[in-house]
Structures are given as structure tokens and as C-alpha cells.
Image 1: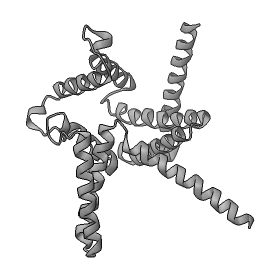
Image 2 (image 1 turned 90 degrees about the vertical axis):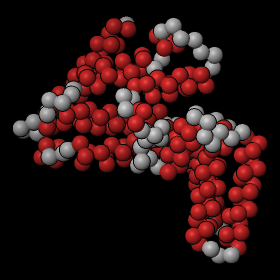
Image 3 (image 1 turned 30 degrees about the vertical axis):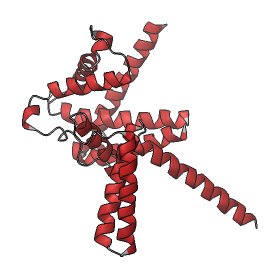
Image 4 (image 1 turned 120 degrees about the horizontal axis):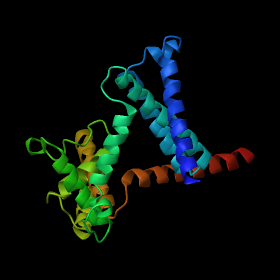
Length: 243
């Protein structure tokens, strides 16, 4: 049974590659033929956000569909590079398999870990060793500059904390948040727009760091709060329409 499932999966992958080759081929689609990796990037990002929304909604069929869309775009972009003889989907798969084996020595090697925190620490150490030019760069250079600000703040806080910078404890950070909120209120009271913007950003960054210490991802927390608000608003609007 397992072998038949593997064969079926391989056949589906081959069919997807063949489909994309047809779209890009001489008698294919004019729109697909003119695409570049850069032009496809915006569509891939859109599909990832749609996938995130489907996962948040916990609708299995929607997740399945959006995963398919993301997979198509990944294979499509890979095909563009393969056409230039730079790499293939097999190269991509081999690279990620090797990377995951290398970064899980507690599964595929002799390393021992006690908890998920040690897994995370080992992951970062291995990742740093993989960067040949790491000694020439800052530890935060690998955080993409075009990440949404909330996610980037979380990543930068996590990276710098590993090296002893900004290594707060929960109690001190709560005190710091109170102090920064007082600063923000004073800036609002004197109607200083520039200072309010700065203090608000500083307070928000500290909240992100608190979320990290609490092992809560701020993006997930905010997304859940927004969805809860949306549901309350829709319910309120529905009740108002009845009156």
C-alpha cells in the first residue's frame, strides 16, 4: 500500500512538471510564456497569504486547494530556472532533504536534546555554520528586510537574544512596558506626532519581545484577535439589521 502511494505521488509530481512545461512550451499559454521569476513573485506571495488565511480558518478543503496553488507557483518558478540550466526541481528537493537531515542531528545523528528549546538552539548554531560568510555579516542580516514588520521584529528579537543582547526576563519586560506606555501617553498628551510615532513603535517592539518570551508568535496572536473582532462586528451588524 505504501509503495503504491509513493508511486502515485511521484506520478502526480511528474504530471505537474509536464503541465508547466506545456504551459511554457511553443504551443502553450502566451501569459505563462512571458513570465519571469520576478513577475511570478507577487503571485506566490499572494498565494501564501491565501494559504495562511485558509489555515487560520481551519478549513481542510481550502487548505488543500491553497497548498496546491503554492505548489504550482514553486514548481513554475523552478521551471524558469531549469530552462536556463541553473537548477531543477530535483536539485531543490535534494538540497532541502540534505539541509533537514543536517539540521536534525538528534533525529538522524548522535546528538541528544532534552526539549524543543534545545532543538531551536541547535538549529540556529547549525544554520550559522552553514553560512560561509557569517563572520563578515551581522547575525540579523539573514532576516529578510521585506518581511512584514511584526514578523521581522520577532525574528530580530529572537536572533539578538541568542547573543546576549536584549535578553530580558519576563518581570523586567513588564516593568519596561509600563514605563514605555507612560512615555507614549505623555507624547499623546502633548500632541507630539513624531514622538508618539516613535514611542508607539518602541512599545510595540517590546510587546513583540514579550510575546517571544511567552512563546507566543505575535502574528498568530494578532491574527486571532482580528478574526475575533471581525466575528463580533459581523454579529453586531447582523443584529442591527434586524431592528
